[in-house]
Length: 59
Image (tube, rainbow, N blue to C red; front, side, top):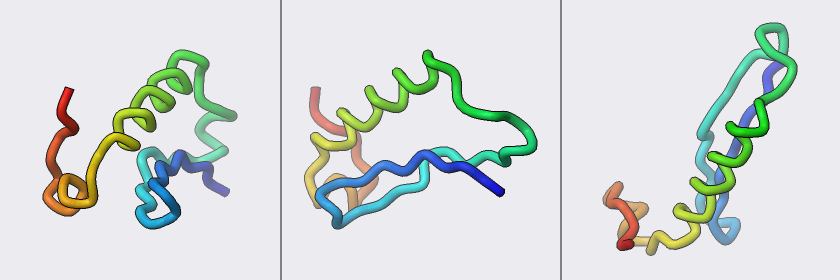
């Protein structure tokens, strides 16, 4: 069994960001969860063109 962290944008793009085996660890830590939430917010700001080209969001 595995657990995964998936980023989604408008049900159009789905990205596996992190995958781990349940036998190796039970869950992610609170600081990791916070970092994934920050990453998801950044990902939500990307345009379709940025996603297609692998560009970083404008700050």
